[in-house]
Length: 309
Image (cartoon, rainbow, N blue to C red; front, side, top):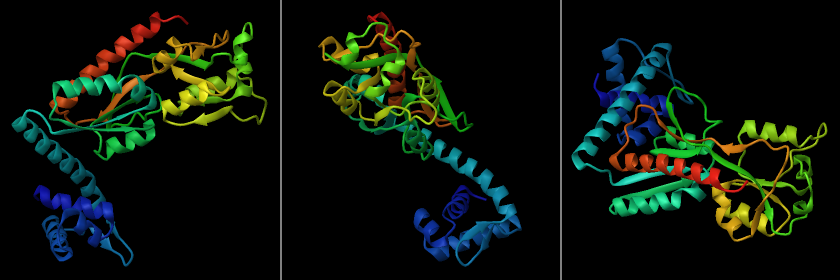
């Protein structure tokens, strides 16, 4: 059975409808039906039950489809590798980034890539790890850079862990909390937190440190993936900002934000990592970007460790 026919089988399995599958593989419906019938004739058993509302795999079909997916994936990888080898560099790169690396690393990384490969088109998506994982699995991103603590340890994902990016809690200049001695976490709660989506482990730790009463809600005043918005809210209200140090270094140096000295707060950090699809080879341009990410993450970690607090 050739790879084209296997692609037809996978398309029908995904769409559960011959009309939609035919549109996906750019065939007429009768032509797709003939291709599936030929596959069934070659195998000697039915691959699908043709119901009135949808098409579903038979038990034998499910067995074949699982293996067909692997072959179709490997075929796409081979085609892509051959094209990359022929061209020596790909024409586009699509990457994802969590809010912190988008604010601290992407501007310099993309500028560097534009200098090294000015003919390359770059697509960037800034979002949380959950959305970015779905996009990598759909092969819509070459890789993404984010906190990887909650990324599932699934066999289809490859995670490269990088240097930790440490952080803390920041408030505007003149904030009421700045006048308190021996500040504790529970004193931050009434002001509300502005953060990105927190990893489960960090949220659980902070919940304990806030010493919340039974039934008391976690003091999350604002959650979003836009660091500019989070920072602006903290600078113009009494909201407490949770961020890695590198993301707000300019505001701190300018005196617009101040790092809180919280005596019962253990070291907080973003567990940065690169996530890609296992088995998918990277283009030369993606490889340049990944190498730059690794180097910059180490530099930011060293720089952050040297900053006061």
